[in-house]
Length: 169
Image (cartoon, rainbow, N blue to C red; front, side, top):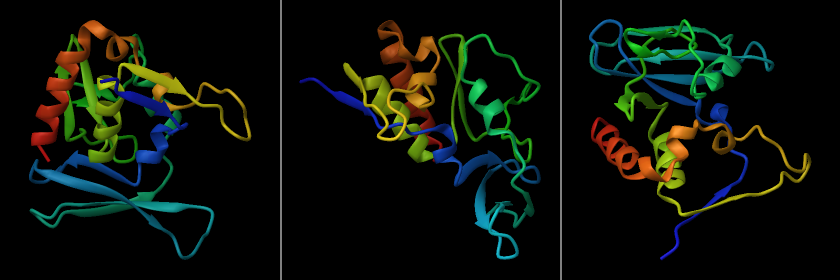
């Protein structure tokens, strides 16, 4: 059976509504959520909350999404790549869903992002669809995934690591 992946132009920013990170206070899972600001319709606020220790903090959404997207590229090294691994670009906290894989770091913001990666990796047929307004473009997350994730020889290993990350949820 052929498993098909269709690239509908999802971007990394489409998964930023909920980012799972390590709580800075208790080191357990915490969530960064987007909260729309009532004072301004131009900006939104990011709020981190931990259900385990009640840690809460918020800030304006001034993170650099473009830098986060560049983290996916094979040879890109950013200051957010620390000894803690990949850090979120709003609060600078380690992502909850990250694991060493094929000599690289496999990471995801949340379960939906992880499911997207799993769908892409397990597919044997990958299709790109043109954007209605832009035609063909190279801005989708699928088109920006690093080569090591796309390689057939890494498929089984990447899928195993995705399953390990799912068990952390």
